[in-house]
Length: 220
Image (tube, rainbow, N blue to C red; front, side):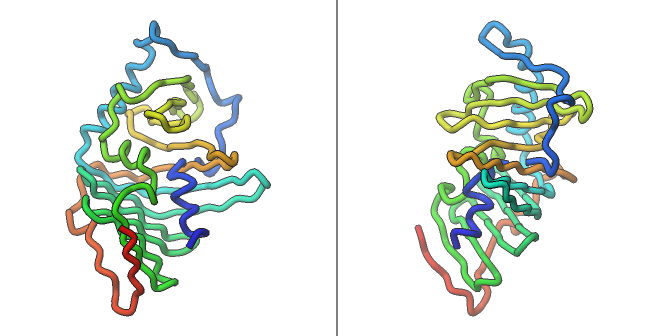
């Protein structure tokens, strides 16, 4: 079970399949309280994410370990506010996290096992709050920002509450493109979002009933 949880519990601390090279970054600003105007785009992007009632995207995830190894994952992500989410891993194996606002399920088809959870600690509370629109601009402290001229992306290294620093990437339209950071062991983890639809998915997308024969573990 631990090997399966690495995909989310290292993260949802998210990586582009190819890291952005330093030469592609046009400029870097160290921000302080007097430079509030420089964060207008970021403020608007966070507000856009907060105001969006729901969305679904494809995701690609790359975890790079300090020993040089790595692992890729891919699947679909859906969010319906408040509190509904669905992380469906397709590759390299099937795995599902789904929450209906009350109960969170973790289901692994090949192990014939489903876990019933009560909170986001088994997933990632900070990132899920961000995706769910529960984090506002006032909750975020910007450490630095970069503009990637080649990819036309804006990257912001931020603190969200007491959580470790994380990089957030936004498209020129202000849509969240990736989240990235390192864990305490120095492993790098990034998820890239693509092919997003900003229409709230139907409520039944977030329901789950364990199939017959599946072992159910109630961890609430």
